Amino acid sequence: MKIAIFVLLVAFAATAFASVRFPRAAGATCSPPYNYYNTNYSPHKSVYNEFDRVYYTCKPGYTDRNGVSSVKCYLGFWSGTWPTCLSN
Image 1 (cartoon, rainbow, N blue to C red):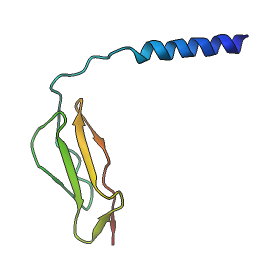
Image 2: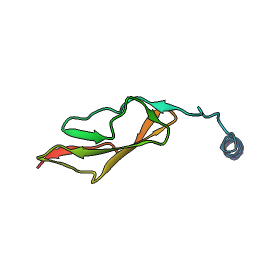
Image 3: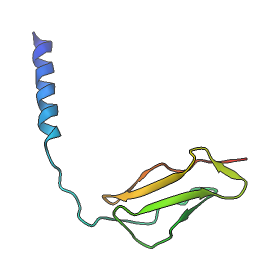
């Protein structure tokens, strides 16, 4: 009986929080992303606007094991596929 009540409480909490809309920082910007070892990125800017995307390439002699790596500025943070450049 206690487990059933616990499950119902968890389900209720999950439903309640799923409908909550958290405030979003309008016009959030990002600083330049990290320039990983053996990588280049473009475009270069001093400040990136929200939803701006940066594409990484590996320096000659290296290959990105992720294929194409890019990150997007979202809510003031970078998110996406970061590069992993390995020696050929």
